Image 1 (cartoon, rainbow, N blue to C red):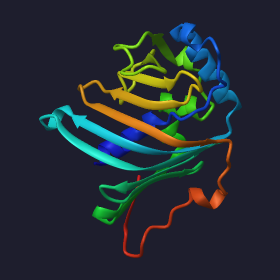
Image 2 (image 1 turned 90 degrees about the vertical axis):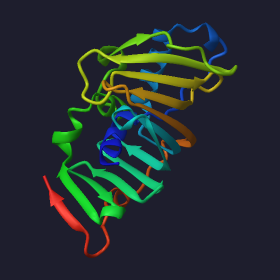
Image 3 (image 1 turned 45 degrees about the vertical axis):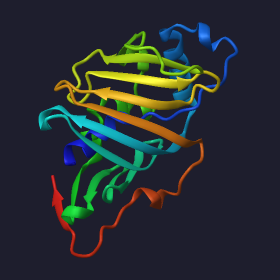
Image 4 (image 1 turned 30 degrees about the vertical axis):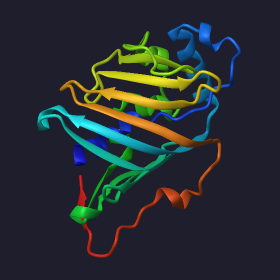
Length: 220
């Protein structure tokens, strides 16, 4: 579970792009341009999520999780897993912490050193550029239902956790409602996002987490 939890940094996608009456005619690059424009204006966003992961190194064992996430500029983020077990990933811009309730353990590392190497985090935190960081391609498969648009993103520089990122958005609002992340080992993670709110700031204390007394603290 630790590997999957760390990999979630590559899934920090949740946005609202202004609706367009001609969205169906947009090319993949045009869709990406609208995404970029929105992220340059967005200061914060939050969503609930459902995650399903198939791990290739574990005989395609499927894992499921759910919870909520918040990203807030500059450098603030928090992921709360409520199922199948409590896990918390949080950054206050200085410290990056991962808490695992089942193991009674929390790992702490400098946020700047860890997050600056994550291509997708840098973009969704407003520090990257989608068209510069990714090759934008048509989707690998057609959307499963009407009213949905899709694009595929491939990091231009080798990324440790992401080989292909497939993105589905609502045709009317351009709200991202599904992501499919494929890593170099063939593991696949699907992330469904819903109940999205943008530009609704959370207080600074939300991005600090104090584990229960007796938790083992590991500093790296």
